[in-house]
Length: 300
Image (cartoon, rainbow, N blue to C red):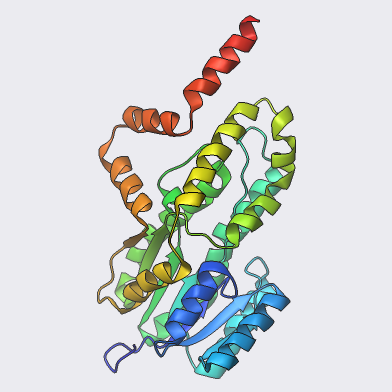
């Protein structure tokens, strides 16, 4: 809970009406933070507002589309008007598009970056002047273990998170003189509606997968992904606990990993050579079998 020494009391969460964002909004509000949760979907905004009222939680829901300048300006201005300041910005809004890099359209790749990367830049640029003026604040960017470890088919998503990691590292140094910390949260897979949303965003590629030159790669990815998703027992609240630590730790760490798999993958990426790491990924996704099948088909 915020104290007199830690005056970071007002939290603004993008993508705050669903998934990890909603989980964080409820968790932080229950611990005394005043939370502004922004989201695009009107139905989800209404559901969260109703939930907050029923539970008597200090959550205020705002319309917010991080891909739209006017929407971002309006939402931040409204939060500033109501609370006087935004002390903590949690850049959580994100989408995932699954496709091999040869096949993804540039329009879809831009869509991926518009939310996960440019949306973060857009909201952060709007919030930072007030934080710098007050000489305090915290930027928490929701990355992913995919920001460190790229998998087949998730190249577009990983690329956006790699970019997010880079600007976070840069801003952590740029904002140090102003007393503003920049933190990355790096979760592994946690079941939320994002998985369903990702399937919708990727539907064209999923539908075409059997006819694709990469059909074996798509199938291998899907098999491995189903194992990952069915094995996960983590909840949005598990991630919210880590976000709370990132807010209240003084000073915070640069990065916080969430889930056992994320911690293992991060350690492997750090200590294994690229060749050894690739060998592990090839085994995990069964890509040697895909290669053998392609070779056999060429001979026949």
